[in-house]
Image (cartoon, rainbow, N blue to C red; front, side, top):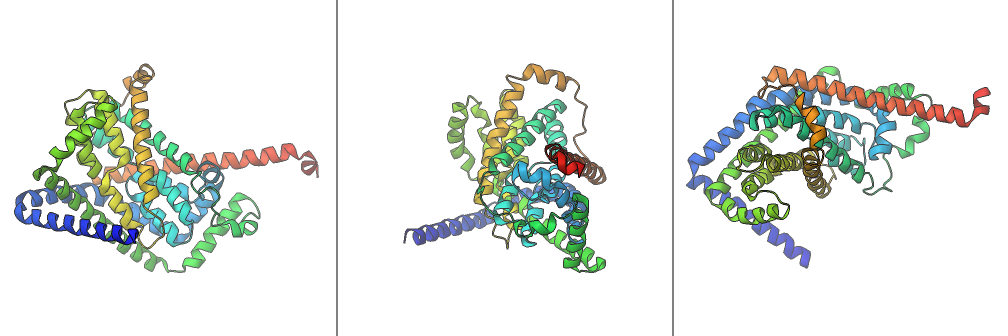
Length: 415
């Protein structure tokens, strides 16, 4: 009975909020249109050209079996470290290189293709959902703060915090049975490369689509997903603007300011936190312009980037549709990511400030804006570099295991 009442209450609240938003668009059409245009500009100039090639290529790579090939090679790294299948490294590298919500799109495809379990998908989402380096260095550090050196601090804190969350979520439903457990005897035959090649051929055989059809469907699905993401960006731009117009921001500021004071952070950043809860770009911009110490502004910006905003959360929820992956673990992971990112930012600029000073002194200037072609090239290079590092690490782990096995079984070696 209590559950039914809660469901009805949630429905009434949701219906009321949607009605208020619709009414606000009628009362303040000029503000809403301006906000929507700003959101559309971000989508058209940055998101669409930057992500479309990678969305299409990731779909083709899945259909061709390349992701399955990479997955077998990276299993020795990803399983002991994060308790996820090797293909998770592909989502990780794409997330690190291309940013939100690339990893969620790929994780959703993994689950629909039965390449991971529900729990493994939730583990993957917990730590692969990261901002890309171009956003941290170019947009935030240079474009908003005007300080290229801060990009290093924000990036180190962001990615270490992400991996920290991944290690914690390794123990989330720890005894859950891996997807490939039933086929261990079959897949473990032979060396790692022959197994990877067999996985590639099997995946291509199972897919069976001609290359032309595969490419056409990849473009169609990618455009559908990206248009949905564009809609979310525009919607949340309008939401933030309407929250300001209706004075909701003024009501929330004292509450958020009190929480910030408790952590010895300037309450002048309450406005930035409120906007950051809703949308990442607006939040980090507000933090950079706030009248507060640089340390406080950087800590709040680090938290906002890790939290990523309800706009990104909405995008993630929409791209994992038709799967049984739940949003609750994802939201908990984002909260943890934000806390760890803020803590590591404080650590790097506070107790470790002297150590970081030598690193920041040699910071290379980065341009604040990238044209679409530059973004695609740089993102591609980053992905190749990240995948290369992960593959090398995984292969070294595999070789070290074989070496230890030979050392501990000298009779087998002689035989």
